[in-house]
Length: 340
Image 1 (tube, rainbow, N blue to C red):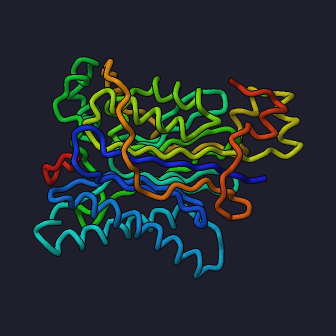
Image 2: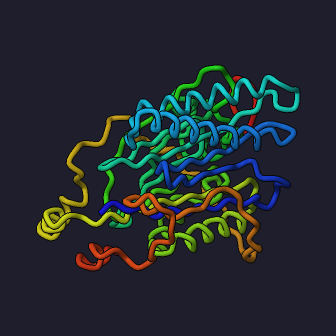
Image 3: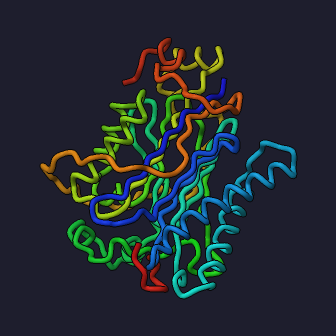
């Protein structure tokens, strides 16, 4: 049985007076998207909301026209490319929106795999059923360009680089954009985390792994904990986190294979992962803080646990799935000079 549970949360942070992040959990379309807007006069908020809206609309219309629930990698890329055009055109309409843009990460489940789309420095992580965290995207940033060019090579040079938040790619800055996509296996027990740099600038990968693994049966608590940690360490930007847990129950054959050879089954999905760049971005050092837990702010966006099989929206039990019980639980764009 195919089943997904998804939760999302966004927070304005401690330093900003408005939230330019936006996200969507689409139960009917079965995909998930997070955007981090940028630009003056609150135009970043316009960009992020418009990008989410256009991606959702195009995917819905294409699937309806084809009378199919199928989502291809090409459709995902087309949807993000179209959103880029719409944000770019809207940005030229007034001085207030000129130069606005947004990052984007999106996750589209299929029968046996997940499609990821990525532009900018928002990220997608995957926590395996065994508790291992992998970064599935690589930031489109000036920092990574400097590393690739050999201009930054030591950990000290990387950690002290003054322009970590300058991004080299975003939606809406130019009339064309390169969209990175990749496919990864869909495996029961995996948790995917989509997030903005308001989290990853202040909370390192080790803490993200610990929080997700320690709260894998309570995604609400996991997301609230991540937001609290970011705010306690300064909350210098808006923070958005969206978690997608794969609650599929394996067939009897898959279950038998897992019991016979758990190491092999945990790493196999019936096909090889694609050969897209999987190099992780350098970890930004954790900022320790003894600040008290701040009061949670109101969130925006669509938060909807999803039952993929029926397509209906409803709260899914936080109890571990039956298959897990049977196995035993394992444990700112350079060209425009903008910063997000």
